[in-house]
Figure 1 (cartoon, helix red, strand yellow):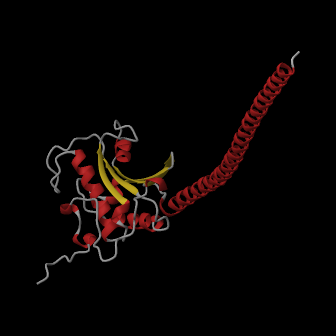
Figure 2 (tube, one colour):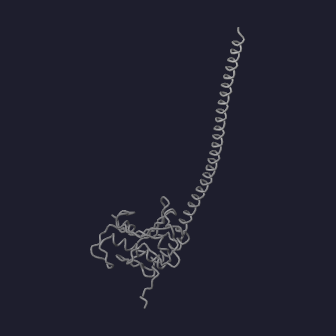
Figure 3 (cartoon, rainbow, N blue to C red):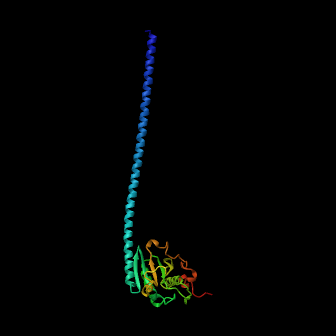
Length: 264
């Protein structure tokens, strides 16, 4: 073989080897970069997973603490409810006052003969004494709100009453308002804690067929609501006059913090 031909062959061989070596080096570099990228991605995923696990563990611990707090609150609420019921029974329960509890609502039923004369909405002295006792117990539970609901029997009012009522519904509402007005103006109960309504003859607790049943149905119910029904703010703003949820024409002047006589 001529010398030139041999040299060309050697040069070509060397060139091929260099090309193949370069390709192998490049492939190796590419694979290393891919492996490094995969390793970095795996490391980031591990870090993210670790951070997520840490956050979830902290959240779980927070939920456990909140659960414990809620359980404690439930126990305290149940204890407070039991204490309220016991105090109500000790102060009020009698032949004319009955107390019941259902789904967290404590209801004090006061028969109307203790509170009012027939057909009237003016509180009797005996009724005022009972409402003062109610206010005294509720003063120990300032976060509670309550409803005053008037009820009657099903005997219709034939003629207009001395206070101007022509039906049982109006009479029951008027008596509830009279009780609320007394609790606000005479017992110092915050008006934000009170609502008044009339149930008329439509929510009996006894059979209206007998005189005894009708007597039980003529009543004022004081319904003490659970704490979750409390008004958002039971405190009177500084410098502001008291606010009541009764219509102005039904509120005694002293309940609004206004003088009973006009000032010059």
